Length: 185
Image 1: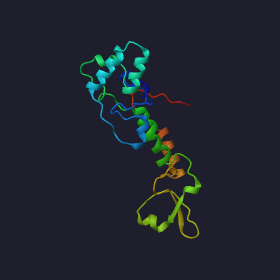
Image 2: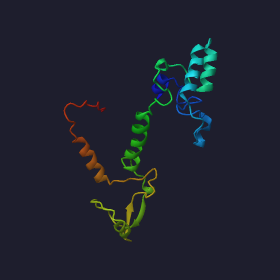
Image 3: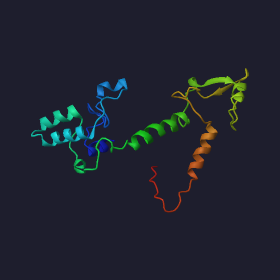
Image 4: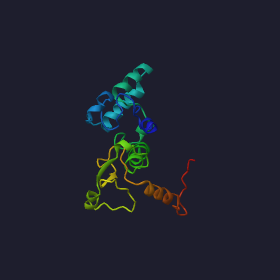
């Protein structure tokens, strides 16, 4: 995302006006409300003002005020600097959504024993929740279950199922002609 912002002519994701789609400020981020949407015309005007500024001090003031700086991509007449900025897939999906699902929702992170809820085994059967894992019942007929609210320590798979998934992933064959991804060890 930092390179995306810089190349597109926006300031850092940690800047006062960090958003590429609206004029929300960092200090109002907690309100979770969109501000005035940015437009191609205003962005290009602010970028031009930044480029034509005579001193570094003026450039810094303009950058902090607008969240915009010059980019050579602004010379492309067909390009819209506001609408043609792609969401940072690496940061948002791979490090955000997918990481959350892998580690938290799918349970590839240790479950804290204190957060495991228990339900009657009959309730699980009634919900038609099928699994081939062997779960142990307590003497009183209760069975350990994952957090139904999918909280920060919930898990969706048993240890046996997680091992099966991991082993299956290792068996995946990539078809010829596709680029191989670098694997860190």
